[in-house]
Length: 185
Image (cartoon, rainbow, N blue to C red; front, side):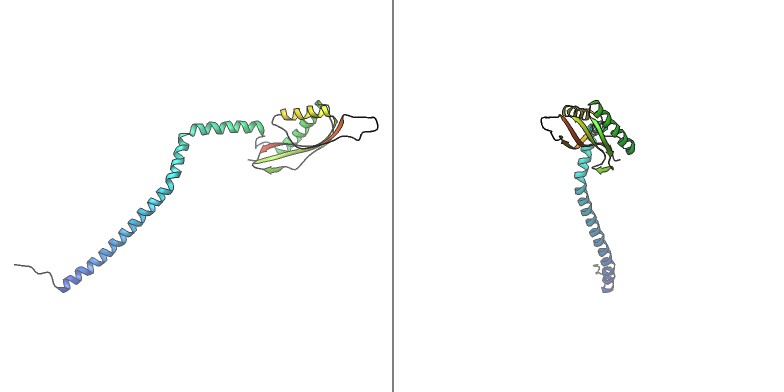
């Protein structure tokens, strides 16, 4: 005996059940494909970063050694962040006076300027007026270059006194601005 396909009401029930099931399955597949596509995008964006991180991890010891070397070099050229700015300024002023006197220059006056911030450093500056011979000035500048931490000469104005008739003097008056660095943080 041949069985017949169920009647129209059964077909309507089957369609009524299958359509929502198929619609839900289609929505689920659409959401799944969207998530897979987003994951592929995220992975493509992460891969270069991951490669850089892997490279950094492989070179970690060399990077740490370079950082330590840079920190040591910086410590040779700047005061630590924990140092007091006032003490550094006063010490710089005294050090400049000592170096000038050792080079046989007279210090006519000096002043500590307000601290300024530049590129991660606090710049502590002292201005001064020095008097003496040009040879003493050369010795003073050499002593500044050898100071530790280095004392930078930011400005230097040398003025020779007016010569009187028949007299030549080797004395000069110097307006100088000298500074040292302190780590800002």
